[in-house]
Each structure stands twice: as C-alpha cells, then as structure tokens.
Image (cartoon, rainbow, N blue to C red):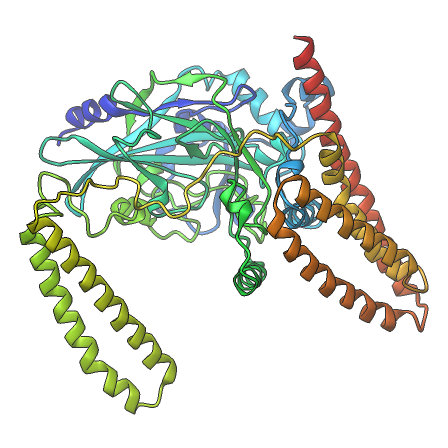
Length: 574
C-alpha cells in the first residue's frame, strides 16, 4: 500500500480516546518534543535543548542515550502558585478500595521513593507549563502504520505524551518524562473489515488486551473504536471506570506464588479478583479511566515508519534516565525498540502480542466448526498422540520422573482434546451449529472497580492507618523491652483487618487472615525473644527508623484522605 492508502485506511478506523477531566498531558508530535529537549549519552549532555533535530536521532545515538525535556532550571523556576494550579485532587478513596496486603505493597513503594532514584520533584508542573508556553498540545497527533503479519492486516496506532505523571498526580506507580501508548486493529486482508481491537495496558500482553469488533464491551463511534485513557498513566481501557492495575512486581513474585499456593491449599476463593480488585497481593494503584474529560477523535494522523530516523532508528530513551533499578521512573523507549535496544514483539509480531497466533481472518480460514476442518485437526492431534506415546518409554528409561510426569500429563490433555473434538464432530453431523464465543479467549481481563458501596469513612480511615499501625508494632519490638506493646498493636491490627473483610463481605478471606496472623504472631514471638535479652544502640536506631517511616506513611495517607474529603465536599456544594 502506498502512503496515501495507508493514511486513508488508518483514518477510517482511528480510535476515539476519552481522557480524565484532570489530565494535563495529551498526544503530541515528536518533533516539537525533540527540538525542545536535550540529548544526553551516559549522563553527559551532547546536544542542548534547541540544538537537536529529529533527523539527528538515528542509529548513531543508541547506547546510554536519552532525552531530557525539563531542565533543572525550568524545574526551579516553577513558583508555588503555578504548582498549585497544576495540582490535581483525587476523586475517591484509593486505599479503601484494596486489601491490607495491597496497602503494604503501596507503603513499600511510597517509602522507596525516598531511597531510589526517581523523577525530580516539580517535573510535572514544569513539563505542563513548558508545553503550554510552546503550544505543543494544540493539535493532538497519532502515529500509524499498516502492516501484514501472519495473514492479518494490522492497523497500528501509537500515541506520544510529553509526561507520565501517574505517581505525582494520582498516587500511582511511577512518573517519567515521555510516554508511548499503542493500539492495534486486526483486519481481514481481503475486505479490510476490522475483526479485533487491541489496546495497550502498561507492560501487559496477550489475549486479554483484545476485544472482538462485535463484543458489546468494545464500544464504537461509527467505525472508530472508543477507548478510555488512564489519568496520568495513559493506559488504554475499553470501559470507563477505575481499575486496579495488575503489575508484576520484580522481587515479589515468590510472595505472590506463596499466596496463591496458600489459597489453593486452604480452598479459598480469590474474591478480590472476582470483584475486579486484582490479585490479593497485587499493587493497589488505581488507574482512573473515567472518560469525563476531553474526547479526541479528530487526529492529526502521521505515518509511523522507518523513514523517520527518530522512530525507525533511535534506540535510546524518550525521557530522563533516572537510573531507577525498577525501571518505573526511567524514560520509556519508543514503539519499535525496548530499553535494551531490541525490537519489540508488539512491533515485529503484533498478532502474537495479541495472542492471535494460530488464528486466521474469516475470509482466509475454513469454517472452524466445519467437519472438514475438524477432521484435519483430529488427524494432526492423532500424530501428536503417537509421538508422545513413543516418547514416554524413552523418558521413563532415562530415569527423569519430572519429565515423565510432564509427558504423561501432556498425553492426558491430548486425549481429552481428542474426545472433545470427536464429541463436537458428532454434534455437527446431527445438525447442531454452536455459536462462536467471542469472549472465550479472555482469562483475566481488566475489569472496572465496582462502586465503593462499603468504603465509608470508617473503612477509609482504617485504610490510611492500617499499615502505619503495623509498622509501629514492628518498631515497638526494637524500642521496648518485651512484647506487650507489640502484642496489643498486632492484635488490634488483626481484629480491624478481619472486621474490614467482614465489612466487605469477603467471608472466606477471614480464614486466610487468621492463618496469616497466626504465622505473624509466631514470628513476633521469635523476634521478641531474640531482642528481649539485650539492648543495643542499633536496636533503637532500627526501631526509630521504622517508627519514622510509619509516621511519614500515615501523614501521606492522611493527606490523600483529606484531599478526597475536600473534593467530596466541593462536589456536594456544586
């Protein structure tokens, strides 16, 4: 397809994006951002702001390269009145929407800001003021390309933002200069009819990111999909609402596995996930995709191709590189390359990224429920069963029990699939034609939070105080000789958290909490026994640090709680 045809096809289905009413940053052209940014390599400035051209970002500036949109001088020039004008107020009680262990993880992230490299303070208002001064957000821009991959015609859309202010603006996970978000529409290459819509959501991938064109959840305005952008994070969702992110935290995967194992062993249902709250130990950062603000559908559409070196060749970062070891506060890489300089899977293989491998567009695929296609599948499956049967004796002779169990389980699954296909074959021969399930691919899709019907002021206050109370109980072990104070605090925390689960009607979670608190209580007794026999300066120092962290955390949570209350009072007056 020539560029004009590509632009026409992209424009015909370009998604309409609705933003939160508090959003400060919207998709812009990369040229204005690059020309007003400095280029640094390994922390050394090689081109000052105003000296860099978009064509200068190519393959020659890769290792250790990053852009810096806001200079230190621009941050320092932000006066308090301007910072207040750019500040946003939270719309609801965030901590009251998630469980106790989620709030523990939130506390760890909040306190880690004081010790790990993060985006400098006042970067958000400085970036917003600079965009306002330069007028870079007057014309919203979306980049697009058309590619054929694995039999599909793919419309790929990319949005660039000057800033992600999710943490500083909305108590989310991170802040970073620059932000790329993406969406895809998978079309039939014969008639160019849209079949699937895929929306990027943080670092996730797979089938949960896509919706069928006829899915009621995939709303449209004419021929254009309607998407909702998270406030500050710009993650894309199919429905308006608040979402608890399902972010995999490096270093804590063992804890998540332990929690899942305990839930299975005790036969406890994950009621938090069933209510749209994500994993019970998941990060409790709420993504507010309310869609009550600006709606953008009239885009300045530009081609996303390799002819532009800044998009096709530049492998550096699109924002300040803080050196954050978690990568959350570092500038992002572009839509083509990841932070290691490797080509992204979502660029090279958007079909596999969306979990569509093995599928075919309707016009190119034989009827999936037809007898001929089922016979081919059964024949292939029979060959796989024979292969597994031949492999099993060899694995058994090699004395590798784990591999034997794995192959045995595979054989059982293959035989089960064969029986299912044979049963479907008999139904087709009898004249039945089952309807296609357009949502059968969804396993753990993003679900908006239910209205906070049980998050009253008591629960919200407890949510703000719960983790600081636990920290104070730990600090008491170090500061006081004996277990009395810690035991009282721990017992109070246990009682309140159990009452919280009862208030939320998570009755089965009460059993889980009882088991957890028994384990915590035993640990406290052990730690107390170790420290009760001697007093040292280090003990008081550790206890003082933990107590100070508890106070800082409570102050931050209380500030968020009072801001929410002020917002509610203002809304009531209006």
